[in-house]
Length: 143
Image (cartoon, rainbow, N blue to C red; front, side, top):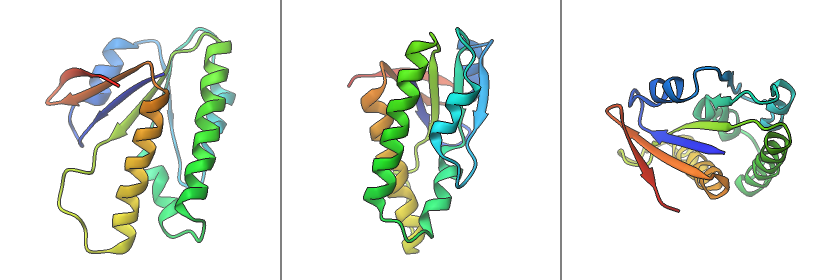
């Protein structure tokens, strides 16, 4: 798996489109399980998963605890990675960096940023390569 992280409008999509021109793109929808991406994998074809921040918005008003959500998406990430390896699919995650701004006063918005940060950590932990994109420039990050 490869993870591309950066702020809004930083050039993540353009970089990924250049590096993986034949990729299938999958936008996560709020409430959807991450593992649903397994069903659209095409053998040998890169799969780009994006829309993570919007997808996480479904969790901020939920009664489900953050630890339970995190355990669920970790299981799903593991399943995605195994399926990608079995099908020779390069799995690419595009995620937004939202932790560098002003801390919101609203509890739900703070929770969203926490969840996004944890998701980014969990994806990066499983990734072979992590890339930071800013102003269209790409920097490899060490793990």
